[in-house]
Length: 570
Image 1: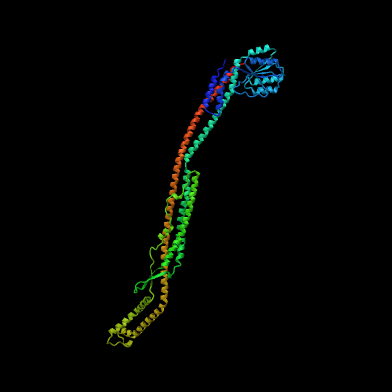
Image 2: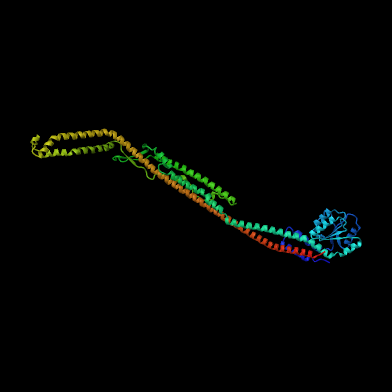
């Protein structure tokens, strides 16, 4: 007669399906393989702690039990574990006349979850050991019974009282109970593993969302507000530099121009001949001085412009190095300046385009020679005319008296004067000679003084004219130099700004292109990962739902086995 254990094995199969494939797959296969052998097994196991003495009744008991299909296992001091699918014994019989109390208690302790009844056979030991065994059985809810075999008939009667069918079912249930408990541990372990995997998937999903939100914003921010800022600072620095250089009087350019212009002398001016009748000679700058002026300007400007170019080159290289380090950190392609089309920075061409005379210098000085003296005499002639003009009324008076008194007698003494006319005639006659003499003397003195003064005034006037014209030439060069320097540095700063602007725009555009491609690629990868994570999470959720079913099935199975065991009373 077989016991119907199919419901138990069906539930175990159901649990295996709910769990799915795990590293315990072999264990479930072993259960399936041995399920039929367990169900068909008819040999009832009983454990026996036998006396080492050659006891006839003990031997007869063992033989009779085996004849009735009961397998007797002699328990040793070091019991070996029972290997599935061997059935677990629920009954222990003890012959312990010569067995140690410690060994018996060790055996009981190791099998306390399996034994349901303990028989104490032919007890002749001390009551202390019996009490220990009885107390142990009571504490562990094990039924205990003392029996005494006086003859073989007593043994036969005892064997007839054994309900083999009931005990065999109990043994099979006891054998399957640890199996189900182990399956329950497998379910809980798988549950913990799946929850850990689900937690990791959730973390990965959150990381992907965070990565999507951040994307490559760090690169954009670093490029716009840190790396490219260095180039913009160069542009600002160059503008401030030339604003300081171009300040009048104390600016660097003003000082350098003043240094060159202060070396200019009158001999550096060329005389340009005009018509012989023209009393002035035009002056112009010597060609050598003009060329030196242009060369000086070009040297000073190019020296500063080349400094700016070297600084810009260094900053640009540093910018690309820093930018490529940032890109390589995110495993993005590097950038090179060679692929950009940028404005040509040619300071020489720029300086040459502004280094010219917008207006030629023209001065003038008086011709040396007679014209120079005649011009000087004109001044003195005017003075003589003024002085003579002051004496003119007296001369006119004298000439008038002579004219109106022609043929008439002019009074010789003041007493002979009878009227005003005669008085004027008398006065004119007396002072005529003195007035003529004074006029002649004054004119002679002035002419003599003018001749003497000419020898001093003409050299001084020549020096003053030369100094004045030299200063005019300096002022002209100062004005032209200021224009050349201002126009050149403004063109240079504009060209530099255009270069930096173009470079910045090219870098920004190239970075945007790289980031767009990288973002698209990363988005594709992210979407694939998200899909994989979503699929994995769905799989885990399904497994968890199945594990919940398996856990409920396992709990139900454990409860069922326990209830069936409890219903079997022996």
